[in-house]
Structure formats: C-alpha cells, structure tokens
Amino acid sequence: AGKISFTLNGDLPLKKAYEPFTSARKRGEIRVQKIRQHDEYQLKKAASLVKKLFNKTFTGSGEKELSELIHQELKKWQELLSAFSHKAQTGHFPGKQAIELGLALVAGLLGQSNSFSLIQRLIKETNALEDFAEHFEDLDDFYNSQFQTWQALSKALNEQFKANRPTLEKDLSAKQALDELERIYRLAAPYDQLKSINPLIDQVQKINSQLVQTKRQVAQAQLNGCIERVQSALTEASAPSDLQNKALHPLQQCKKRIEHTDAIAQLTSEQTDMLSYEDDAYELINRHIEAQRKQDTSNKIAETAVVVPTPKRTVTISHADIMAGQTDNTFIETEDQVEHYIKQLRDKLLTAVRDGDRVRIK
Image 1 (spheres, helix red, strand yellow):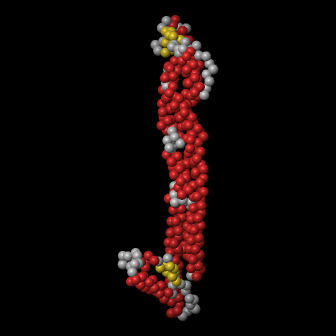
Image 2 (cartoon, rainbow, N blue to C red):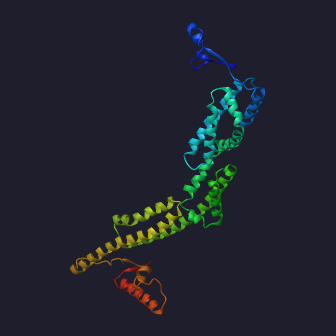
Image 3 (cartoon, rainbow, N blue to C red):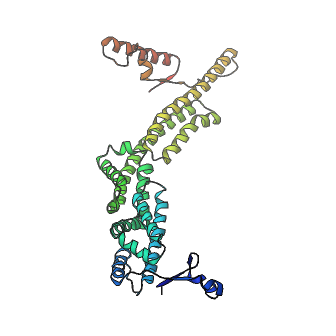
C-alpha cells in the first residue's frame, strides 16, 4: 500500500524482503518505518497540476498511484526532449535553451527517491513547470511537425538562393521575401510564424527561376553565336575532324554547364569564358591555315600542283588592345587622343586585311 518501508543495513526493497523475513537471524535486524504521505489536499493539488501539465486525469486513489503517473509522464517528456536536443544539435534550430532547461527540470524530479519527495518537488516547482509546459507544446509541435519546414528555410537561405542572392536582392519583391525569411530564421521562438515560410520560399523561387531562365537564354544565344562562327571558320579552313573536335570541345562543355547550372554568377562567368574559348579556337584554326599557306608556297615554287586559295585567318582586334597604346590613359578626352585611337585601329585593320586575314572586332 506504500504506507511502510523496510530497512536492513540500508533500504530493503519489497521484492527482496522475503528471504530476510523468513530468516530467523536476519528477521530481528529488519526495521519497519512509516512512510510520510501527503494529505488529501496536497494530493488534489498535485493531481490538478498533472492535469494542467500532461492533460492527464488522475483516476486513482492513492499517493503511490499518483506518483507512478507523474513518473510515467515525466519519462515521456524526458525521452521527447532528448530527441529534440539531438535534432537541435544538427544545425541552427530554435528552442535549444528551452530544451536544456526542460531536461534539467525533469531530471530533478525524476531524481527523487520516493513518491512523497516526488510529489513534494512537483508542487514546489509548480510555476517553473507551468511555464515550461507552454514551451514544451511549441517544441513538440516544431520538432515533430514543423522540423522539415525549418529545414526547407535553412536550405533556402544557406544553399538554394545563396549563390543568386546578390541578383535576387535587386528585385524588390524577392528582397522583401528574403529579408522576412532571414528575420524568421534568426528568431529565438519563431513558432507562430512558421506558416509564412513556405509561401515566402515559393515567392522567391518563382522570381529566381525567371531570372535564371532569362540569363540562361542570353548565355545560350551568345554561345550559339560563338559555335556558329567557329564552325564556319573550321569549314572554310577545311579543318580535319581532330582539329574540329579540339576547337569545339571547350565550347560544347561550356554549353553543358550553362544548361545544368542555376547559379547566375556562373552563367555570367561562362559568358566571359566562351569568348576566350572562341579566341582559342581561332588560334588553332590560324595555325592550321598558316601550315596550309606554307604548303601552298612550296607548291608554287615547285609548280607541282594547282594551288587552291587558302582560307583567311581570323585576327581579333579588341578595344583594350588599342587603348593599351594610349600612354597610361584608359579614357579618350582630347581630339589628339581621338586621332591617335583611330589611327591605331586603322593600322591594325589594314595590316590584317593586307595579310589576307579577316578581322573580328571584340
């Protein structure tokens, strides 16, 4: 009934008491003591608190049964809080301080050695337990129902939109949504605002997809132009298949990257790189043409074959090359500088044309 306890050189649990009680030698050493018990008022007070904390109605009649119910419900809290704590350690998640507080509170209660002290401690911690019960409801809902929503928020800010954020923030609607997501992410207790996360992510994703698609289309159009020009030059030069493959391979790889990336910065980088790949392709083609010209010259001297006019090399003239001759000045501000610039451009163009080449302005 839980009203008395036994000791025999220390506590004697009931399940180990049979042998001492049936031993003439040991029976005389057993001590019987009355267990302190709470009065009816205290039990009703504890039962009422159990109803508030755990939503459990105590239907028993004694202190021992009430203690067992309290212990059972506290163990459930402890198991859930331990699971929440494990999840919380895997990243940036709210409620870590509340979880630690709850675990310490529950451990203190479960550490009581008997039903009297457990109920006594429960009543003593009434205010702390009632405050924590509100936090527990938020934690339980978050870690068991909203955890994936929070993971989606973390992924959106730290992975999904991170690369394109500088571009996205130039769009007012996207910036406002990202700022709101960031604000929620930094809250210590964001539980009442979790419902806003998915709609905000969808809003940013829609804008992000539009920006990426537009940028990809521009990059693809530019790349197609590069490939067409190089292919035309290869055809005109009657380039062998190995040369064609070597000249076009970097551009084809660039095409694959453009098709598969969603990073706007990378798309911009690919646009710059494709121009370099085009320059490299012309270098390969030009070397092939120069070799043909040497062969044609030998044929003319030997007069052993009908010479077919060799194709033109592609010479690239860029604004940067011309400005490099402007004596440490990257700006044109005077008439003399205008004349100098035009003269340099004219000389380069004429040199290329007189050499039988064609000019690509870059």
